[in-house]
Length: 88
Length: 238
Image 1 (cartoon, rainbow over the protein chains, first blue to last red):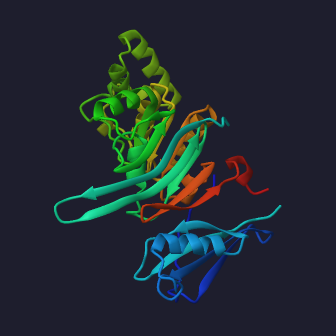
Image 2 (image 1 turned 60 degrees about the vertical axis):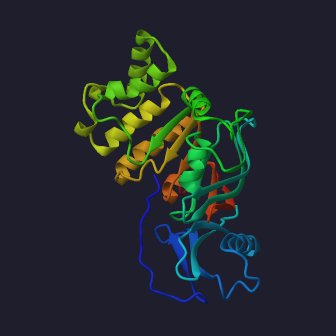
Image 3 (image 1 turned 60 degrees about the horizontal axis):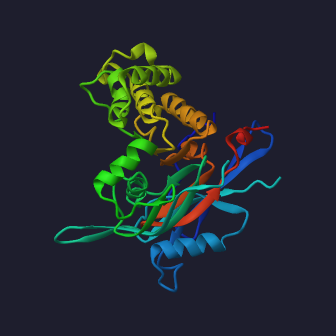
């Protein structure tokens, strides 16, 4: 059964991100996650609504990352957790 | 997995109005769910997940758009018509179990069969079979308050499946459970899905969502992303 854990990250700006690697007993990295904030004002020159903005950002993101979780909007940023796709 | 669509929505929109404000809870949601699928709906609080589940579960009508359930257009149905379709085809599992406190475990699970018009002898057999399957038969004469949260949710699952519904709708089914009881409920839903029952589940939990074949992500009442998942058995560390 996979286990779900919660961890704390320090505060950070929308220009930064965290990469989190899950390593199995010092062997291979079994999965990698990236947590970042997308800024609805600074990253959104066309002033799209939040849903359209998210859709565009997700579709134009590097292909080897997929959305894992979208969190509630905080001020003008939307926190996003992405997961790296393991290619066979 | 079958490729026949069990349900299909086009441009589904839900607006809640009162005298002062108008809230757009769902906006132009188009989706299709095939028989045998296990679909998770995720998104932040207030994004419209439960509103969508309520419409898909024929508990509410959309303000605009179409909703075909088993090829029947339901978006303009009156409550009586929705109730007819619900009792024949749908089972529900809620975060807070929604068991009737005054009824025993047996009576709670029997209730949908009474609405469906089954005779007493058949009802008894079906209820016993559902309770056995959920490993809760030994508690059949207990009342909900005498059970743990995990046991209450197992009764709620028994009630949802007792009439052999085509589709089970689950709204945060593990939300009030600790991880051990949550796992138990998710394994049960996984088993039901493997037996052919279609499941649509709203969840905040990535672990619960990992049981699904597909994840739909909602934000501000719109589907903004969809992931197809590998089967659960492929996810263990090799």
